[in-house]
Length: 280
Image 1 (cartoon, rainbow, N blue to C red):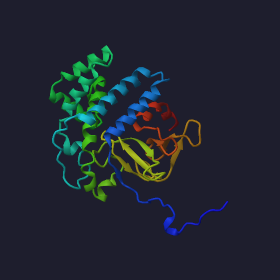
Image 2: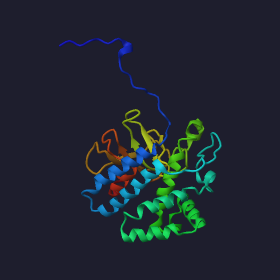
Image 3: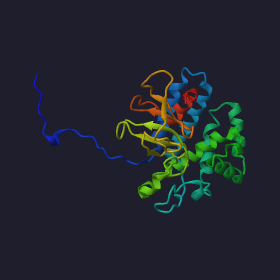
Image 4: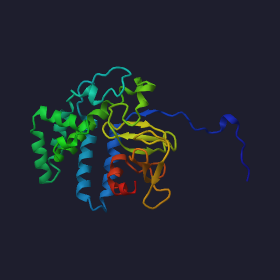
């Protein structure tokens, strides 16, 4: 058998440029999340909870497609974390989405969840604003636990819709605080080792606006130190989900290797692998 010898300009090449920030595509993100939830729920002891989450995420898909998002939040060009709580804390338009979310969920959820949603929908706007701001600041104890999931879901739909707008104007120095989302200032939910746009790169996935931003793999996502970093897995040496721990700050993050298993989804597989924390 013979093989053709290709000229240099005919040899396929991989684009080695690193895209520092990947803008979210909310509809695609939520659709994949709902599909992953449905798949994992089949044999899960948490089937009721995962089914509720699937119903919730399907409503996020509907809102991302059809909702009125009002006027775009104002931001200063090149400002660090332009949609963070410090710069957009007074924006409450997400409450409109919360009411639509509740309306869509009421016919499909259990009676117990419906009671929670009805009470949530009747809260004063000022109270809801305070709850939303508390969640964004990480003050979780200030928000009744039964409301947090639904408030966060509404805020996520809102901010993921607008997240792409300031990204082209973010300057290099804006991405220096790599432990937080360069768009909204929220913490990442996990690290994603990507198969696209370039195999093997690590991106942190924002827990609120679904933005992803690049961070080198040889550094702690909490303290940015580049030594005494360890990877842990339950069994497989090349496991698709692993824990990265740091002996400097004693922080950890999960790493989802989508180059090994493309079906992995940031929020769902973080939840599905909570037991792995003991390895970190």
